[in-house]
Length: 291
Image (cartoon, rainbow, N blue to C red):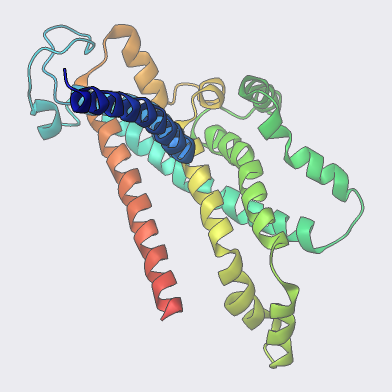
């Protein structure tokens, strides 16, 4: 080997020794910069994975009662989602209860939020504590307490007991969402409206309500999801009434029909569509304000 070749080999080895640490440093630097994004994507994938499994098994054609093993692709369940007895009836009942519970909890929660955020009165601190008790205590405690109350009052279990229980359960979440929004409002905006000779009703409808609307909408959506998904409180206060979560629980004892996965997939897609539409509307508003 000549002197030139020996020198070139040494230069190549030295270049490799210096390149390897740089590559490692660049890799560690990239990982540090994107660690939060990677963790967020992993968490999102972990949360969405069960929904994807339900979506895949909604196209399954099981041989037996249980829909736990993949057999073959089929769209029979999608063509007849109400093919199982009482499935659509329980689904409609859950939707009806969720809508009315959302309306009741949103109206009461919004009024309570304005009262707690804007006015000072006796027992204000106690009311704040009592409002958040349903969020702090286990659902089974609240469910058993409500069942005892209804039994002592002689109220028959059914639609109305479920609705009252769901409103009481969802009320705390609405108050939390709306109160945070109301407390962050600038009172000078309402004062400016009054200086421009706006009446109290006009000030509320044109200034206060639009500002508080995102918190009210968030509380309403959360109430709907909690009411529709609830099983423990409903099971204690339903009597012979069967909602969709109770139907799913009962079906799991005998065999899970594919139609349950179809309903779950449809609701998941509707929820994703609502989020996408809301995000697009928010981006459009931001662009219009910038322009």
